[in-house]
Length: 346
Ligand code: SF4
Image (cartoon, rainbow, N blue to C red):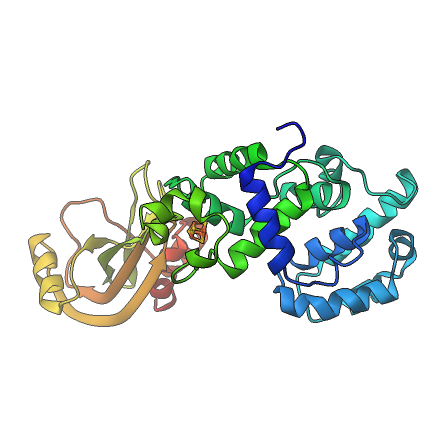
């Protein structure tokens, strides 16, 4: 591109120069200011961050000041922002910079990410905004804008989407990398909105945007929905006979492998179901009392349980049940916490 801004960058930056948000860290930017603002904005809204930024900068205007400061002062200046590890890392990193780099931030993304609290995004933001390096700082805004520009249906949670987004914008980035990133962030915040319809009429990139041309802006980005967990209804039986309680060993593979459990079965909640089930298993009983419902959430599965205390009138003639006293149960057998609600009712 020989130093000439390409049409994409030209339009984007012209829009930015007209419409950019005025933010304290953008006026007379310094590497330290860029760094501080990026760390603050990780979990804080831009509007809320402004006052904190100004206060912090006033109290600790340079990396040296930050390195020398008491941790208590740093924490105090952060009070209300939460996620205090951010300011602790900032403080630690400032000390490292003073000891090892004359109090200067490195210009290079790889070097920057060696500092505590600086990940790839923050490093790219600092390298581009403070040092003019061609680095794309991929955040949610850039991902959204990219997926629409290119009608890219890659799930934006997939690292591949990040790589494609980075490569795409890197090709377009030319004269003002820092402003290029900030322009895309502002565009994402102000025009290419995340919820509801984007304001394509006001968008400088509309002529490049495939989703806009296809009128499918709102089909992008594609975000994989969190999978809903499968629910299983389970009936749990506390089968008791002469002071002993029935347990059985689970299969040696699969969920809760090789642990002991109270006998249970997939089934619905009706008492008649439970009664029939026991009869089918050849278990005769004196009484059957509901013990209430409990829920246990596994990583991909939810058990919705209903329990019954069942007083047997004879030991079963066959089967895999083991009858143990409460003491034996607690001392010798591992009952998974999925059953703890019923264990407590023993
Ligand atoms: S044209 Fe619309 S969808 Fe495309 S980048 Fe601009 S605002 Fe987003």
